[in-house]
Amino acid sequence: MHQMTLAEIARGLADKKFSSEELTRTLLARIAQLDPQLNSFITVTEDLAITQAQAADARRAAGETGALLGAPLAHKDLFCTKGIRTSCASKMLDNFKAPYDATVVAKLAAAGTVTLGKTNMDEFAMGSANESSHYGAVKNPWNLEHVPGGSSGGSAAAVAARLLPGATGTDTGGSIRQPAALSNLTGLKPTYGRVSRWGMIAYASSLDQAGPMARTAEDCALLLQGMAGFDVNDSTSIDEPVPDYSASLNASLQGLRIGVPKEYFSAGLDPRIADLVMASVEELKKLGAVVKEISLPNLQHAIPAYYVIAPAEASSNLSRFDGVRFGYRCEDPKDLTDLYKRSRGEGFGPEVQRRILVGAYALSAGYYDAYYLQAQKIRRLIKNDFMSAFAEVDVILGPTTPNPAWKIGAKNADPIAEYLEDFYTITANLAGLPGLSMPAGFADGLPVGVQLLAPYFQEGRLLNVAHQYQQVTDWHTRSPAGF
Ligand code: GLN
Image (cartoon, rainbow, N blue to C red; front, side):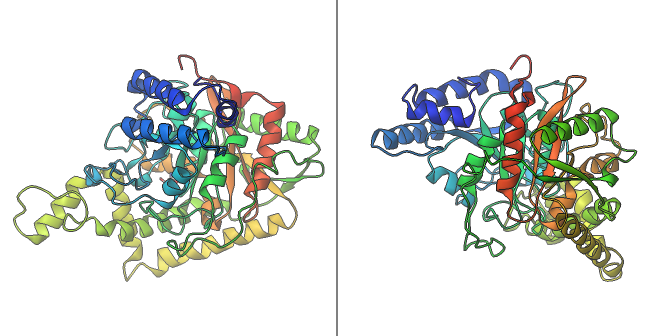
């Protein structure tokens, strides 16, 4: 039962082959049995899951239909969930129970999904390895000594290990696509503003975007359908109609123009990944696509710009956690200054503190023009590069990550080594574009992902290309030994 995709579950439930409650109980037992090896959940919401599954079964018995009615899911632990711990994987919010549901959570619940729990992540979504969690590192089911990617590493590991068919993630610089690549999943970061950010604990507000993580593009289409849409509570949410993502999955790729940026094949790219990327291009050519070399001349400035803008926004967003109104409060403060200092010093982990310091520095009066303003100018140049590229091609294809999953601890001594892993993903966030990662092969038993980028609001196109690719390849169907 645990091998089923969301689309298969939807058919099984519609055909009354099993109930949502049966499926939910099976998956909860699997989580109890297998998650101790992975640490992919921070909270398992067993009682809520059974109640929601029974409610979904009752709705179906009353004649209701719907692809997500009774579908089991988990949410990254930065989506507010009413009455349930929402920790952001930080000691700062260890005992925080959200007073309301995030829009994404509420929309998916209204569609009838069943919440199995809250997944582990990097603290405040800062990281690419899921090692910075207050609740400990997450292990990659493909090799338990390796990272699953981050920051949505718990969602990735849980779905890859078949503990559940899909999960939510968020992507500020790659945190859906990168863990999807490292764990053999399909993950989609929508256009900025496509999915509401209301009730998502903010990391960098101009970059954050929620999206689905699942095994197939078909499943991502179902999940995105349940998540996307305008929300009056999010002033950056965009009032554009939501297309039927499943309806466009089978469109022909005949004549599709794929651009491959020449700057992608730089020294930092593992040659095994370069080969798998080119193999995926060959598959898409067989389906009728035409391939063209393009250029993104400002690509090499993306990491420095991102690692100024994201920490700058984070330093502002995280200033509310001061131990007074929000967050952990230290024991026996001497005075107010001591309370601020120790609450923040004890409540935030080292990576979060590093980002707050970098961000506050970049925003400070004497340095603002030199760093923050400069980074914003680079951001515009990167967006312009994409606009020129999309005048010539329909999608851009390349690696999702420069390397496959690395060993837990391997990059701990050098934070910049971990930042470099975001080379291919962060440009989409800086420009606000949609991006998808899909399974494209293995390097020494570890999964490799290929990334597709498209113009604004063309999530349907990305899902279409990935779905067609998944009709002629079987990488996405492979499951890790022992799970
Ligand atoms: N790895 C990037 C960072 O640490 C991206 C994280 C994310 O997308 N949330 O900032």
